[in-house]
Length: 167
Image 1 (tube, rainbow, N blue to C red):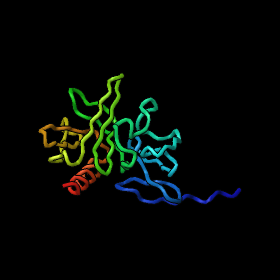
Image 2 (cartoon, rainbow, N blue to C red):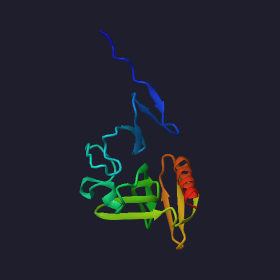
Image 3 (cartoon, rainbow, N blue to C red):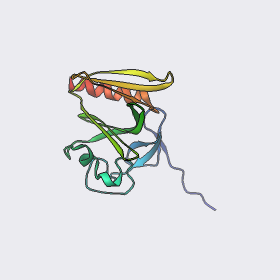
């Protein structure tokens, strides 16, 4: 019996791999990586593959969920939590102009939309002595604290670099 050729592995960021040949971009799904094809719905391109892990089906596309222009491209998304009275698990989305967060826990929906021009600072923090997080401060004096990242340093560097580009 002849075995099919093994797929090649290509490195995609800190400690993450996508399996298989060909053009791809990847997205995090609960800390794991999956192959994303150009036909997947990523940035509201109108094609619904039914496998995108972003907003739930009732919310429509990524762009309608946050009220963004269709031209705004999704760069990366991460599983994380926002610190309110409790940690609300959800997803952080990073686009060329925004840091966005969506959570829907027991019918309680939380949406945070921060344009990079609104952000006055970004710093690494730790929640409960062990939970790595990122705090984003705005020019209005608000502080948004995100925690429970699988790759906090990678996320921090991405946000920090995009923030520097906008300032």
